[in-house]
Amino acid sequence: MEKAFSKNLINIEPYVAGEQPRSADIIKLNANENPYPPSPEVHKAIAAFNADGLRLYPPMDAAPLRQAAADFYGLDRSCVFAGNGSDDVLAAAFRAFFNSDKPILYPDITYSFYPVWCELLKIPFRTIPVDEGFNVNVEDYYTDNGGVVLPNPNAPTTIGLGRDRIEELIKHNRESVVIIDEAYADFSGVSCVPLIKKYDNLVVTQTFSKSRALAGMRVAIALADPYLISYLDAVKDSYNSYPMDAVSICAGTAAMRDREYFEATCGKIVATRQRVTKRLRELGFILPDSSANFLFATHPDHTAREIFSYLRENGIYVRYFSKPRIDNHLRITVGTDEQMDKLLELLEKLINK
Ligand SMILES: *Cc1c(COP(=O)(O)O)cnc(C)c1O
Image (cartoon, rainbow, N blue to C red):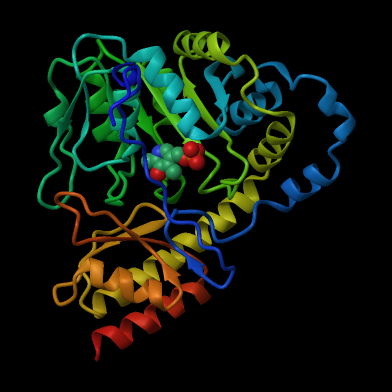
C-alpha cells in the first residue's frame, strides 16, 4: 500500500555494481579491478601506520596525498583535490560545477553513475549518441550546455580519444566546465592533465581503484585550475570536511609515490590486453581496440547473455548490461595472463563446439 508520506521520498534508480562472488575460486573480471596487488610501498606504509594517531582527525585536505599527486604531475598542490574514490570526487564536481538551467551533456553509452547523480542532484542532462562504432564525436558537443562530462577512454566501450580531440571539445565549451573522467587513462597513454594549465574550465578526475590497485580503499583525485579546486573544497567543507581517513591518505600517498611499480603493472595489463584482443578476434569476436584495462566484445554466433551465463557457470564473472545498444556486448576486465588463459580456453570450447 502507498504510504501517505511516500511522495516526499526520493525517487531514484541506483547504480548497480558488478556482482561480488562469495567464493575465492571465482575469477572476477566484472568490475575492472586491478589483478595485481598495490605497490609494495603501500604494504609498508600500512604496516608502519601507527593506530594511536587515529584519535586525531586526519590531515586537513588530505595534504600528503595532494602533494604526492602534485609532484607526480609537476603541478602546484593548489591544482589538486582528493576524495574517497572518484565516485565521491565526481559527485562533488557535479555539485560544484553543474548548476545551470541548461542540460549537461554526456554520451548515451557511458559510465552509468552520471544519470544517477543527475537524478539525485536534480541536474538537467541530455545524452549525445555515440556513432555505430561507439565513437564519441566531439563536434556533437559544440552546442549550448550547462557542462560536459566524458570518460576518456570511454566506458564500457574502451575507446579513447586523442588529447587534440579533447582540446577541441574544451575550446568549444569555454562557458561551461568540462570534466574528463580519466578512470582508465593510465592504460591508454593519453592524459589531459597537461591541459589544465591552459584551460581554466577543465577538470580531470582520476581514481586509484584501477591502475593503482586500491579499489578496496576508496582514493581518487581531481586536477584543475586552483579556481575550480577552491569550489570543490567549498562543496567538501559543506558536507564533510574530512572525507578521507588517515589510513587511506597514507596508502594513497605511498601508491602515488611509487611510479616504477605503477608503470610496470600498467604495462603488464596492456600487454595482456593486446594478446587477448588478438586471440578473441581469431575466435570471431568483434571488439574495438581497447585503451583501457577491459574489453568490450560481441560475437556473431553467440549472444552476450549466453556467453555471460556460460562463463558464470564455469567460474568466471564478466559484466553484461541489458541496456539499449549494448545488450549484445560483454565487458571483460583484463586479468592476469593465467586468468585470461582460462577465459580463452572456455571461450574456445564454446565457439568450437
Ligand atoms: C570505476 C570508475 C570510476 C570510479 O571509480 P572509484 O572506484 O569510485 O574511484 C569512475 N569513472 C569511471 C568511468 C569508472 O569506470
